[in-house]
Amino acid sequence: MSFSPLIRQLIDALRGLPGVGPKTAQRMALSLLERDRQGGLRLAEALQQAMEGVGYCSRCRTLSEAEICELCSDPRRDDSLLCVLQSPADVWAVEMAGSFRGRYFVLKGHLSPIDGLGPDEIGVPALIERLEGSAVTEVILATNPTVEGEATAHYIAGLLRPLGIRVSRIAHGVPLGGELEFIDGGTLAHALAGRTLIS
Amino acid sequence: MSFSPLIRQLIDALRGLPGVGPKTAQRMALSLLERDRQGGLRLAEALQQAMEGVGYCSRCRTLSEAEICELCSDPRRDDSLLCVLQSPADVWAVEMAGSFRGRYFVLKGHLSPIDGLGPDEIGVPALIERLEGSAVTEVILATNPTVEGEATAHYIAGLLRPLGIRVSRIAHGVPLGGELEFIDGGTLAHALAGRTLIS
Ligand SMILES: [Zn+2]
Ligand SMILES: [Zn+2]
Image 1 (spheres, protein in one colour):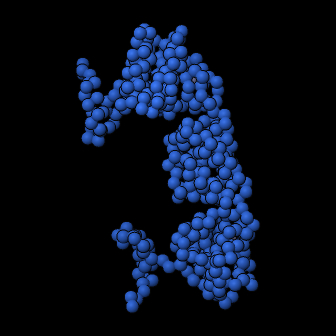
Image 2 (tube, rainbow over the protein chains, first blue to last red; image 1 turned 90 degrees about the vertical axis):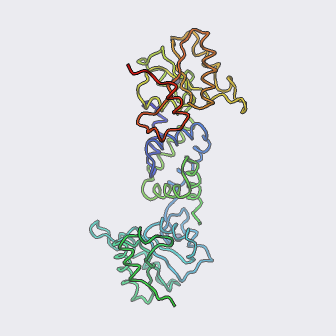
Image 3 (cartoon, rainbow over the protein chains, first blue to last red; image 1 turned 120 degrees about the vertical axis):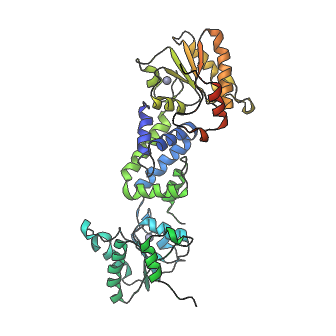
């Protein structure tokens, strides 16, 4: 197929987006070219500004173009609670859920000795530094419910307990609205082990 | 949810792409920011160049940054066959199919008197001009197999026949590999009416 060079270049670049295959990229390119050139130019501008301007918050390490992000600088949030997560996407997920009003700290993934990712690589020293002299009284470890996420939570819990900070782990169990027959065995085992009495 | 302004702007702009909802736009923004800033900048550049540089071929009216597109200037294609379609996307679809080696002419949609779209609006005079003094001996009307596409083909056929040009219509029928029970009644009726003898 002989697309013109600029159209070919656009289709190829669109395929760099997650979940976008050749057909979808063609449909996107055509839609912008035929019906929304202004939208295409706006997207080009937004991409350039974000790729060049967005860094990481120096306090919580989530994605932010400000030195201190809005979540860290919002005076209405609870300074005594710190939720530790594995990625900026997890911050977004917890914010979407809407019930947490404390602060965040973002690790760079999870411990993975086999990949050379130890405490220093994932940012544990920065977490300790964040806690020193802070108002945090409880750290909620919200790393993923995977083997690596569990190991990472366990390791950090061991470091923090001697500092006199309360350490908690997000609950594992059956997702709300889930049907038991479709839930994996590990989750079911966790849900059973973590059962609570109905008063 | 409080994304930083540049991230919010990027997510909003990504939502302008067809088929991209809020969750997908977030996943795309995050993927570019966390894992592929170079890809994001390449996409920004490709978008800007395409939105500003791609126009329409002056000969066939498909999308092209060149005054005369590659399909029109390729000396290996057959000048005697002209395939008339409703949009650049249709040119791409026929090119993908790979069997047609003639030339193209792209209308701007189909006749739609109720929307004020007459022959002038969809480019019929330009088609007549394209044919004058050309080597075209057969025009293949490949407008969509819809009521409007049929009406458009019928109208153009009526104009071209007096000019001594052979006019044909793409065949309608059961798609290859389709199963009869899932094919709509109109298509089936066409397929039956257009049946051919098995020799
Ligand atoms: Zn922050
Ligand atoms: Zn052309």
